[in-house]
Amino acid sequence: MTCEEVRIALGAHALGALDPEEALEIDHHLATCEACGAELMELEGVSAFLGKVSERDVELVASPPRQVLDRLLNDRARRNRRGRILMSVAASAAVLVVGGTVWTAIQTRPAPESAAAGAPAAARSSEPASDAPRMLQDDSSAERAAPAESVQPRKAKPSASATGQSESDVAPYGAATPKPSASPMPSRKAVENGREFTGADRAAGYRATVLAWPTAKGTELGVRVSGVPVETSCALVVVGLDGRRETTMDWVVSRESYQDKAVFRSETTMSVREIARFEIVDRKGERLVVVPVPDKARE
Image (cartoon, rainbow, N blue to C red; front, side):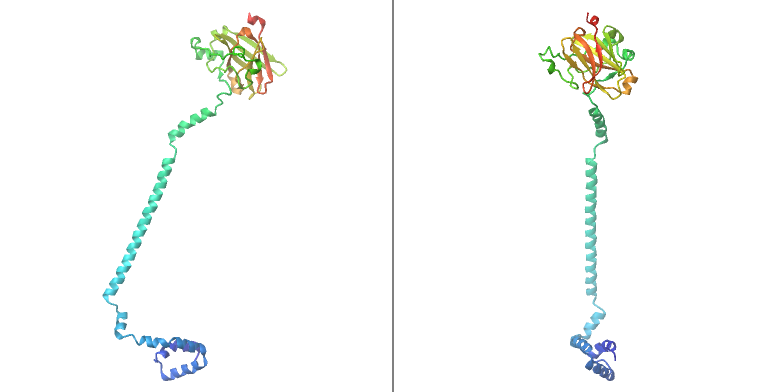
């Protein structure tokens, strides 16, 4: 017999359930095979253990009592119910977490009204409020837009001489003493009461016209340039007979200003009789155009 055949029959041999001839063959094999003999030694305690089992025990295994089955079924149902409760609790917690996240996101999202209201404020803050004076239309359009009675001259700032400052104390380019006015251009009648001065740099092709009309505390000015390259930053410098210099706020020449024949408004604390000339300068302070004031204009 082979080892496989012997090991299949070892259980029955240990219980003494084999035929004598078959049991003899197994004994001969076990005498020469240590592996099968060791396996038989492991099965020796089985017969003693089975000897303790009664017929009643066998009947209970074949058909367990109703109480045992009910207890097993109840335990299984209890475990299933506990599992369902735990799943319901976990699902409820997940719903609460997701709902809280969505609610927080909705509450922290900026309202459309506030965003729309912030857009004009951002646009206004991005405009260079102190960089360039407002552009105004030419005399004819300004005359239609506002009557002469509505013109109110801007209050001029005191000059350097009036405050006891020397010429070196006057604010440099870009930080002007008299701030340009944002009011509309006066009517044609008001302009006719003032003076118009022109100047040119023929070599460069630059031209400038300065309109000046007296006010209670100085002179209101309007400047129109031509030939100056687009995107050039310009400022008007008022030079007095006594050497005083007042620089207005600067503005940037644009295509729109040429198309609209825009006039850039400013003012000075000096009267026309005190002005020697006007200078149009760029951001570096280099003169682009000089507009002289004739002696007869100061009479």
